[in-house]
Image (cartoon, rainbow, N blue to C red):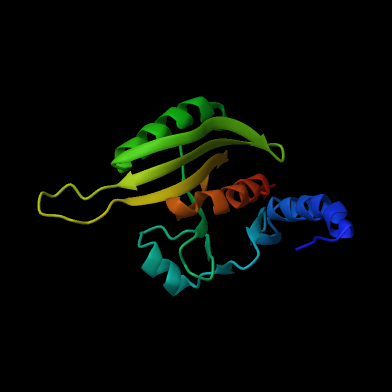
Amino acid sequence: MKIPARFLRLAPLLLAVLLLAAFAAPKLKKTAITKNLTVGVPEGFSALPDDGIAVKYPSPRKPLAVFSNSSGRVDFSVAQKPSTFTSRDYALLLKIYKASIQNMYSKVEFLSEDIRTINKRDFVALEFVSTVADTRRTSNLAPIRRYQMVQYTITGDQLTVFTFVAPAEEQPQWQPTARAVMNSIVMK
């Protein structure tokens, strides 16, 4: 079978275009969470209604917003709670939340942990893969593994927590999106 010379000349260009499209930045929709907080929410994600939030995130303190993909397997949430910490405590907060995460799960593999500035605001940022294993002797359940990216910031007497969660096996697909979402946060 003969391949036309014209196709052979265009093949590298076609391959380059396909690779660029595969690694293109995820499309985000600028969304107001509060009057002083906006974030880029991935296209295709929709806001959960209050009753959906109550079912998926049962807690006395409901998140400000939860957005989920069409399958409901990937979530981005924003929560706020009172805090006695100040913006000078980020190094301490990094240690506290890292330890807290390690205690929450059977196993944690940290991919990154740092204090970063995004849109003129400091955040404690933790990116990790968590594993929850059922340790009962009679259990045959497989461990639950999740890719998570969490950012914390202090505003006055409030701690705001941004969390992106996806199944660990889908990390390569969702990691660029999680990073783009976290980098899109704007707080006044």
